Image 1 (cartoon, helix red, strand yellow):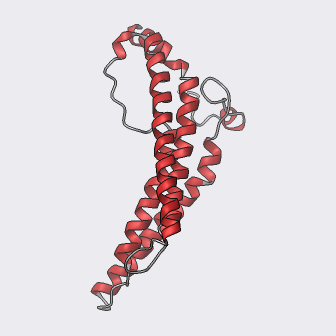
Image 2 (image 1 turned 90 degrees about the vertical axis):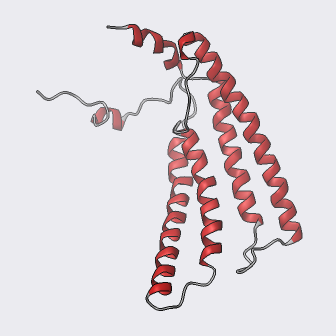
Image 3 (image 1 turned 180 degrees about the horizontal axis):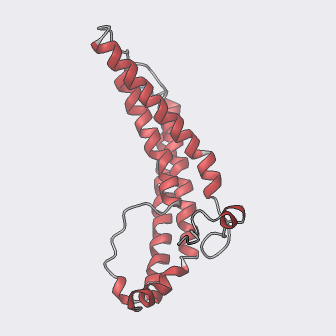
Length: 187
């Protein structure tokens, strides 16, 4: 017998539910902006690796600066993926205190969100400060002389976006935590 699947239901696609607890949903914006940038960087990494491998083992001429480009683009990919991972709640979580009940877990989620926001804002500030100094000093990579400051500013911006998301989660933690214990007790 066919059953309605909420993940594939046309009504839910045309009229999506608001984010948990209502409010601002920045998921689609992140998907189209930062997600597209991360996909482009990943494509560049694959292209650089393929060209380097073919050049190294078939043509005996490796791509100059491939290692340096890979390092820089990998760092950019990690920092671009960070806001997406934060928004999707795909970070690793360890539930040690889930036996305390929904209300306490909701308070702990609020504390974790606000603490994470403060920590990520501090990271953003320090990364921006470091990037500013790199820009003033004209710091570049060794082989290709690629300026380092833009990558520091990218990392700072990503941490700032994550801090914003964590702050929103801190001031309005998901209400689904309240029902966790009731669902586990149900037969």
